[in-house]
Amino acid sequence: MTRERRIDVGRQATDETVDRGSRVEGTLVVVEKSGHAVSFHDVAGGTLLERIELGEYPHEMVVDGARRLAYIGHYGVRMSGDVGTGGSSVFVVDLAARRLVRTIDLSPFNRLHGIAIDDQDRLYVLSEEKAVLLRVDDPAHAEAPSAAVPTGGIKTHMVVTNHDGSLAYVTGLLSHTVSRVDPHDAAQPPVIASPGRLPESCALSRDEQWLYVGARRDKQLVTLDARTLKEHQRQDVPGDPLRVYVVPGQDRLLTTDIENRTVTRYDAELREERSVTFDGTPAGISFHPTEPTAFVTLLDIDTVAILDLETFETTGTISTGSEPDVTALI
Image (cartoon, rainbow, N blue to C red; front, side, top):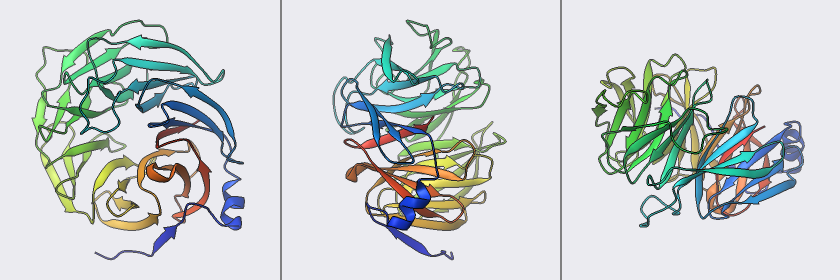
């Protein structure tokens, strides 16, 4: 496997890269896992605009299609290996007003981690403890879930849906499974596959034909048929593929590797193309809606790196609160 040049990125960018990064505009919303908050940062200058206190250890976040509301799951423990009941609410944040407007109580479903939203702004929230996927049809106003379906996994951690929300895919950390479920029909049994050990993250190809899964403990990327969950391809990777993303508008993948502290790009056949190394541990990635730019959270050095997806170089950094985990540009 031929690897293109590896670029080392320190916590502070050079004057030149800060200047280049300043041309990326907008407000970056950052979930601070151990800061127990969500914060708003001006991307061009890196300035902190607002910070909203949430409950202990918020984790995953999605934003509606109008970029008006953000929904943040209350996981309630720091790491998946930590014991504890965790949280059972979804925080609803008004992005224009920059304030927490309310919460959606999903009790008794707890340790809410994976969260997704479809093209109709229906919300899907995964209870890790109960192994149940909850659907909220009108999350802007709802006070309770609209429906719940069993996932067939154990310690279900992450979820992704197709665009119209007719199918959802759930990873089970302890069952070492991926489940395909119908979030609108609990009578339909989940289709379950075992892609490898500790499958934490998954992503759909842009045509929704393939599901890409990172088997962390096996150090492999796996491609499954999104309809049948039959294995199509498997590829060894250098380290620990914590998160797997499909680059918007492309047939390429990005992974965050917490073992080697890299973000790596792969083509649709899982061939490695480029890799960039950071001083901090890369956790989550979000994408600019129109520009070839990604925002990479560096969990242990409280920084977001701005990554140019064409040059695969960092063009700026933003200092954040404690343990930035998930971001979204508005």
